Length: 639
Image 1: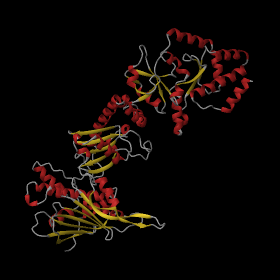
Image 2 (image 1 turned 180 degrees about the horizontal axis):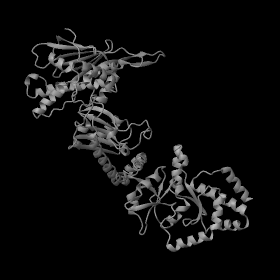
Image 3 (image 1 turned 60 degrees about the vertical axis):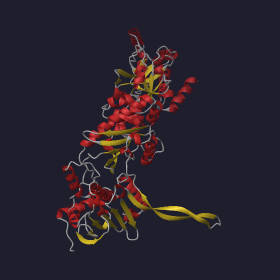
Image 4 (image 1 turned 90 degrees about the vertical axis):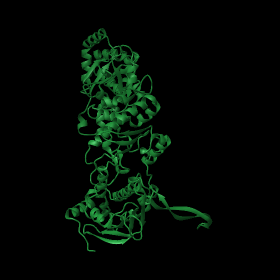
């Protein structure tokens, strides 16, 4: 038979498919297997009303055969097959799908049939790896052994000739391209590669995918090794094996799946040694129908807080994996969630690797966000230890989510955040702090710093502790930004122990402090001038009790924020400096000594000011400007 030519538009599409449409070459096997599954679906549907089919549901299968010597890969099915006219119609015109037409026919008769392939282009993905593709097909209903063979080497056209085939179904034989410098096409003939691709993309095709698998077994006797030792004899043998799992765990009823099965699925699917802290099973019907199985991990992967980490859920449609990491299904603040979403309502692009429209995806993502939030809140309320385990790994992610968007996610995330409590001496949620607030307490007090032990000794927190108020010790670099994004929780404002007004002084006490500052204005100005621009102000403290000095800030940037911006090491961060304030305790003997020296020896008083500033830096965890000068200053004043 003379060679037939593809239509001109089909030629252009074929060229696009080989070079542009598909991202990964291995996708070809997913597409061919999906077509085989569709062919079996059609014949299985017919068998429900036609006894002549002669096959039961258990007889249907897809067989994968690799021949390394001939460099061919064969995918066979015992589905409905194709006549010569159907080969011409379905394979001679690219993007004309017999599956789509079959589905339309069934829709017209109000039958709900799940057909995967609808575009009619997936078959041609084989040409990404093939020099030649041969299709041998016998259609159901043929009276003889006569079948038809479609052969093409690509855009130069195709032939259709009669041939012999005993059973109904289709064999697709792919002759692999020669290996190139950067492409080893022979890898698609390797048992391990085929097994991996099938498990990755087609693990939940409903029909068994069968392949010969090489195994080893021990045989009788021993043999002598080079060193004279005896060793057991092993031999390789081939065994036919069903590769795919067929029924997804998330499609099974909850009553049919044990907790242990869910945990095992998670560990195998997402390569984690730890059990997740929670499993979510979701079955949604409505605007978009989908099923999902989500897992909240206990610990973060080693690369989680790096650019290399790929977030997103696995996206399936009709048991076929479309995307391995669909990031659009998760908001950034819940990117730690792993799992799968399976929906037939998605609009896919021609390669079925990407989504054409995101409306359905947005509906699913919004629903998932609410479900994840509810699950985390339930875990926090009912299993504190598990939630703390989770929070120590992913609490930072929740905090980033709260800061991003200038607090847009405040309502979603605020009641999931925890901080270390000075009283409980453990992590507690904001709601617990508010519930434990004392009568008359105005603010949620907090202190930011390196660790809880150091924060517990902060001089400026003495007044708060003396009142018996709880303090949140915040030790993550981002915590100051979190507080500023929250602003308040349950109508209670946050107040740093460094803030000037902690709401602890009476009006009479405030007036007394103002009076003392006026009386000591000269010495306070002297201290500021002595430090040559290192501080924005020197003032008398109404926080300090037993300590002589502390370092605080004024303006919008705190010491912790300054440290955070410095760690970013950008040009902008160089200008993000805190305005430092040196607070002095007027009731401490050190202040009396400073005052006396100011009157009698200005040079010595200047050295006292430097010493007190250095002391405040050390207490605040700030690096000394000149450690050597500070040490010399101590020695000089001691002598």
